[in-house]
Image (tube, rainbow, N blue to C red; front, top):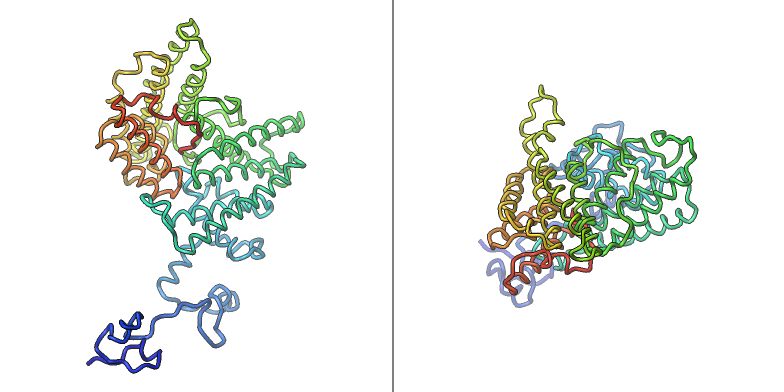
Length: 499
């Protein structure tokens, strides 16, 4: 039988017991409840000696006893959190928010910027250094806060209002980023060679924050700063110094240092390739990256070193083109060099490259297949990019087989769906494919791929890549022209980092 609703009883009003909702609640515009709702509070209880007490503090006081039994979802959330913050005594003095974001960085962020997450993840190795370096610590927490804030957005409604917890994280990320830059600036006022590694790591994480925020323009300032510092530190180093030694505060092991150097080189290459052709900065500057093949376990994007060099060559050719007199011998040599590099790129063997990471005795066929397909995606994108650069010179050699290359690239992207560690590395090839997609079905395929990338990474540069492509496709549709390079990034006066 119907009984008085809880809402009326809590208001000390006689309920008409007409049902849920009752007429009195409907008239008053209140939510009619048949029972008292759950109340979420700060701590483990509303009243009594457990009021305001958190599980973490209870666990510390009861460390010699059997841990308290928690509900399944509470146990899951604790077990899913990393153990570093709970075990390292140096982190106990940090506020709760900082400890949370260090945990978040450790669990969620580190695996985003490397192909294969493992105990050997160099980004995770930065945490101990951050405990002795405030600027690096602030950049780690800012990066984690930014990523957490981004999870409150959706691919199709990125500008929609978000709930307060994500809005607060957004404000926190901006504050932490500002603090990291201020502390870094103070440190750079009196540069010390002993802190060069933590400084370079801090700047790299600030670039990663730019990826999460937009991937637009800001990364170039950090990259320029890192380049200048790299030259400065080389000039300050003593003639007998050995780069592999770890001799003081801020000095990192050679593997981590080489990893950081490679990321700067990669960012310089792929960022410069999709930026306005007017050069902002000196090109081809070395970051002392170790010569030789990068371990796949420590690779950011899984792009072969040769293909990165190929993309860098085409990018440089694109910038040189505008400074050469039309019809000159220099232009002809320019075309010949570009065609030669296209031929070398075409002959690159992705399967052989991927197979080189696994001994023949290992049963790693799926891994080799995925690596090979990822390499093919970058190879095909590099060929499309090189053909577009050749097309800006007026060469007809860039026209044939572009449609076939686009189909091959879309096939590679589709083949890696479901392979999240590999698929998350595909933003640059996917964007290049999108610049060449003329058919609506192809454009839908690219958009779907970008949506998957967003769900995997929560980097706002993915959404910006989608918006750029939509503008390009619309201009091509309205003008009725083919998708020449002039319909793409050459019309933009911005600098995009789409990785």
